[in-house]
Length: 172
Ligand SMILES: Cc1cc2nc3c(=O)[nH]c(=O)nc-3n(C[C@H](O)[C@H](O)[C@H](O)COP(=O)(O)O)c2cc1C
Image 1 (tube, rainbow, N blue to C red):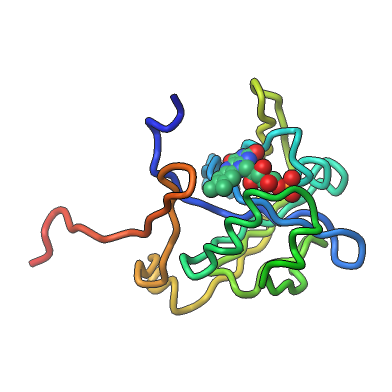
Image 2 (cartoon, rainbow, N blue to C red):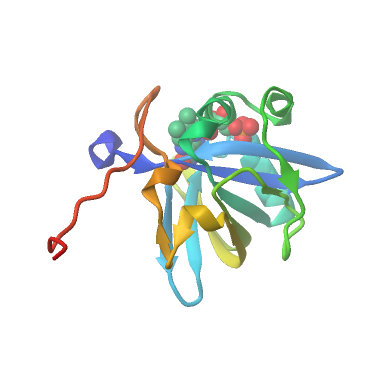
């Protein structure tokens, strides 16, 4: 019952290359595994079109969507293959270190090169080394996310939420 671990943050995985093929899928199953070097891991089912593109190019981009992008997050997470992108408003632009594009209208983008992969059950865990990052200044201040930017978390099928801060120890 993996839902016992929810709510989980919701991200977008961009794969492919501008001028060849670009795809976006939604992913909850993503975590940090090392700070230095900065490594992340994401579990992607081999049935995803995204899986095919990550295997082909050995790189991907993690984009951090805001709640304002929910319609596109839903399309990316419920339709298969690049054809869905014509119904979305993702704005792609060149990345710095990888050939996979970043999503300009997302809150942040992390450019990743695949440095490891392993099949675990019905998903493949890709380890990505983060080679470059981009973020919206108003969404991250003093190295901290600004919750008003509308970071997205997933609760259940079509139910999402954003965040409210609580302080502990209480602020003086
Ligand atoms: C909120 C949400 C989170 C998802 N998380 C994952 C995930 O972590 N791993 C995965 O393989 N699929 C996940 N999916 C399913 C894929 O996003 C979905 O199958 C998508 O259509 C795959 O697109 P593609 O075939 O174009 O790559 C999620 C879907 C939604 C709506």
